[in-house]
Length: 498
Image (cartoon, rainbow, N blue to C red; front, side):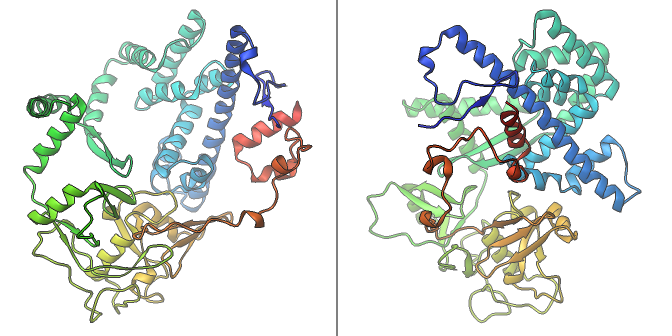
């Protein structure tokens, strides 16, 4: 068995992965945990500095092309939202969505430019990145001088009590208390800003559950909660094994659906004799690619007209992408079935061509159903909020599904720059090329739920760490550093210096 050294907090190498920690005293284990946390804090500090430097570097490129832009921190934050491609460059490296990457870049720029004392605490190993980012988030709307004064008091308090001992909740309360003393008007302005942030976010939690995050003004929340709790109590009295959270979810769902009339249009084959399965898998229905719904729900929806089965769809056998078929306009009444594209005699197909720049409604629905979200790598914005872009600009490229993709406004603009390129392949996959030559592929909705073939492992190059027991992983080849992320490069350099 081979082991991989872990960089010690002081720069040495100790405690290889795979060590039998049951032979180590509790005191030694706690000391090691302290050392590892301090090392992680220092790495996180450098990561913040690197992210901020990347954001500023890409911002300078924009300023060079647009010298009239606002050359301030506020301008940098604004361009991160609208123009900068820094989120697109760092998201694949961090393994996060574009929204998360954008948030981390905002935080990094704010910490470096407005709260360097917090970054210094991280670099000294005393403060972790999460609590530092939470403190900055509570101070982001404050003037820079107020943030600096509040941070100085927080640092002084930490030194006085022997460290950053408070978890996130008490630390944020302390921060808001100091803000109220330093700038009494800010909490009132913050409350007004909070009300503007009301909204609902939805994400797919699994094949059977969506997760809703609802931000609602407190005075409305109290009334809504009273109505939900009242109805939930009735549901629990009718079903004894219903938990409180379950009853609240069912109550809110019932209150909404009782005031709504919609029809789900399904393009699916439901076996008439399939009575053994409790669940039916639908593709392209929920927030995730595939969705499991109760068979009883589907049968009842079909019987009552809340769901109808439209004509079947033709899909690519490999990618599952929509090739031909007519898509209805949203959750329309069951009597309004989809109409084909006016350029065809049958169903709308991927090769339909309209001579105009304006995209026909049938083709718009076709693309929205095929793509479901923005086709830029890592972007999950629904096609409801996307433009339909001619991959090859019209009139050089036709108005046709094989030349159209859904792009959110941000990535529509990004595609127009000379630094990014995209190709739409016949199977509806897209190939994006970054400014540095990296190719990233995105896929359409896999309506067939096909599984790609397993790779031929025998054709892959051997892994010396597995195939050669004499391999020493603690002596990395610095020639490969260009292929590593900033954090990996930092850890590799620590190992090499040891």
